Image (tube, rainbow, N blue to C red; front, side):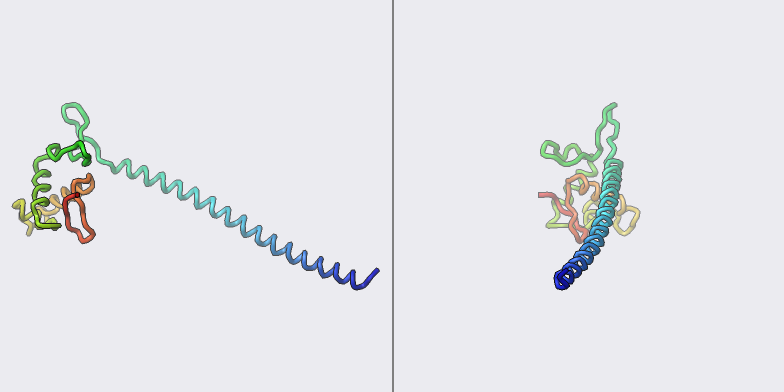
Length: 150
């Protein structure tokens, strides 16, 4: 047998053995990563379902008026006018609108005659302003000021 040919066969076998080991290691890593991705996907699905459930439970509950379900502060739509809002919310909306630009809750309180030096009197107003933001009647700017929607 040709010693040179035998040497090339042995060298090639060693190369293939080394390549086989690298590929086996890569295959193990790929399988492990796929398993991690499957777990991550299941966690994402569960978290998404949980968040969706929390959104449903956090959505406003309609009040009963005359035996019919009715939201006290409805979401703003093109077919819903301000007249559907309770009078105190209409006054809040009007005071924000008549201001010369975005206003803080304290300024709205002053316009409405609320004693803004007493925190307990200002907090309910702040809650109403936020409710109007949540329902699309007002906008809250990043600096905490409120303004009307366009």
